[in-house]
Image 1 (cartoon, rainbow, N blue to C red):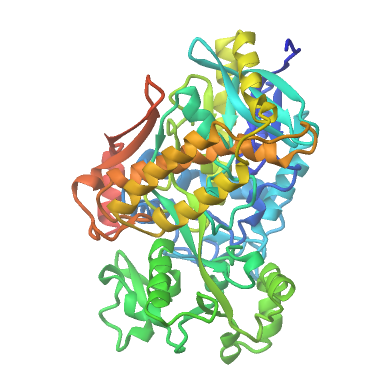
Image 2 (image 1 turned 120 degrees about the horizontal axis):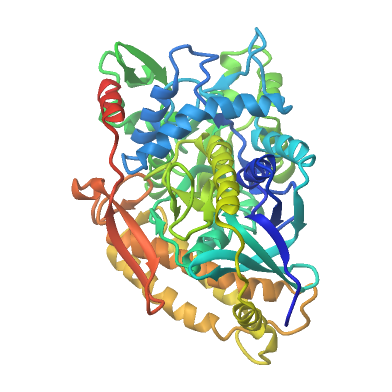
Length: 602
């Protein structure tokens, strides 16, 4: 199986916002760069991030700045975020947004021509720079247009299934061509993982087929640490009808533009669910709103813009109490703004063009006149590769991670809009530090025997004449995760999930995908199973160890926050015997300056 490897200073795995921004930075530093993407260039999951990117530019409300942004992020993450990462993100996000504008991004504009910003859940002030409800698409278009001139090599429709090491340092990767099944060996002095999330481990998800936890598992198998895997964000609003599109994202931008949530009785139920911390004690009625207090100033906001974990649980409670919509969701109504805005139909179509067409085409529903049926959908994982705040390097030398497959910024819960600015801020940093590492540490040795062994293992499902098909195992895993490791968790169900995942893992070792390598989706699914099972076990085990409710994890048997767990992250690593090790580690401490800032901001 001797092959001539493709050689780069830095190999980037993933071509979404983080991967493209990292590749641009690598190339700008004068290092050679190759980018591998599982699908076609331009189809990155980033395009599904619709609402906007959070950056405290202060164009709509001059009170906003990085200090307010970092405290919002830390509060939203329940103080489990890496505080240094949160600070870097808040400080650098405005520059990354303006950089994107300079590269050609066509943001919506204020009347005086500056970047327009909108409200979003968990943010005190209008902070999300946006392009209608197609912000992620515009980001990818801009990064691709800019990056195409940098001499970056793109390898489309290749899936990486193993990282190669040289005496503990990352040395490259193995991949296969999804169309023809041919293997390819890559040698690289540094590798950046930018592979996104794990949503396909669940039955109902906004994530597309590529999101099978590839980067998480590649890092884990190579010996890197994962953290915060128990924190899976269920976006409050996914489509629930028709069944063929169940789970597809309905952007938070709908609520940012005035959309309200109603139960089957027509009640705006979130007014009864406002946490005491945010209640406006001066209001004459709940309907007058609630507020974030910022020094001696305040900002009134609708309760639909509470954090995503809270809104998702409130929706589940309405459905369980019998007040759900006919197809098992609740109603999201943007059409009501006709009471407040003249020409509201044109306004909605202008501000939310993708949502208008999505519901029109997929559900036969006109959102300018009718209510949408929505419900929670698996959307984002806060957990991922444990990285250094400054450089984004993992615990494996030369291996970096950025975007959703990296952890640290979001803590227990991600604020909407922080993901897109996360991609740019830490994609840029990962690329810069990876290029510097490649220059400073020189060449690597490729272990051909290890590469050959990895290829032989990948071929095994094709060589088994008899065996279970991979789709049945994938289906059972998704059902299991949805039922036992979903929005509401209890110890007995998490324990059952861990046991069942172990049984599914044993079955997965003997799956069969007969046929040729060419055009064989069954084989692709067989290889994806390992990734899905690893991340599923990590989520279940970490959720079991964290005996409290915090952020995106809600334990029905431990419904309160526990002081002890407010000081620890859950680390997941591969033990010497290849068994998964799950343990508590201390949260990174805040600097004195940041501690004072949090106290001042209340």
